Length: 187
Image 1 (spheres, rainbow, N blue to C red):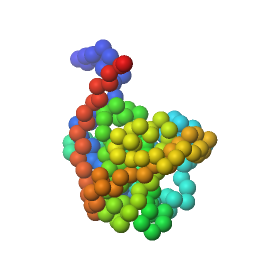
Image 2: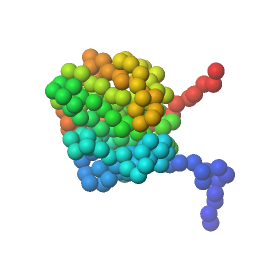
Image 3: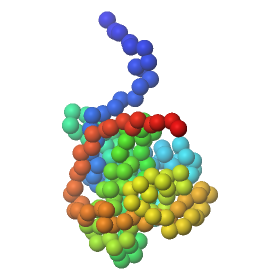
Image 4: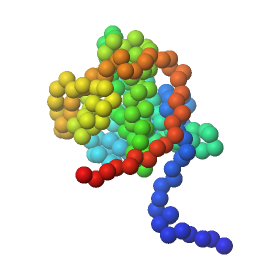
């Protein structure tokens, strides 16, 4: 006997926990690139078929993966970091799967992992080119705008993280994150 609860069939699966860490396995790297394509090519249409570029050859990929029975199962958040020049690191291609954006903290934890990892690798500055609609979010995470710009035909801000707010750590760090849905208040 199958019982279908009304409205339940349209609800996405919400895991009880996520891991945030550097991509370690082939499936994590494949999921990292697949999510970037989904967000930047299909959803936002910033790129035509693939968003990979020369930075990918030197970048460190970072993922957030939802867990099933305590094991990472599917990549639902990504960001990459690279050293642009000695001491100056950059983050880019931050993306969270649409079904996991309203759970809170996934994007923030990816940013924290990115900046803290770069800080541990010797960053004296950490920068990112942030889409304009995300500038306030980054400001809340202790970033400042260095100025507006246009990138890929879209308004962005070049932004800098306050490294004093992001303690340095090693590349083997893994964070466990339990989702906490945001309660949005309408003004």
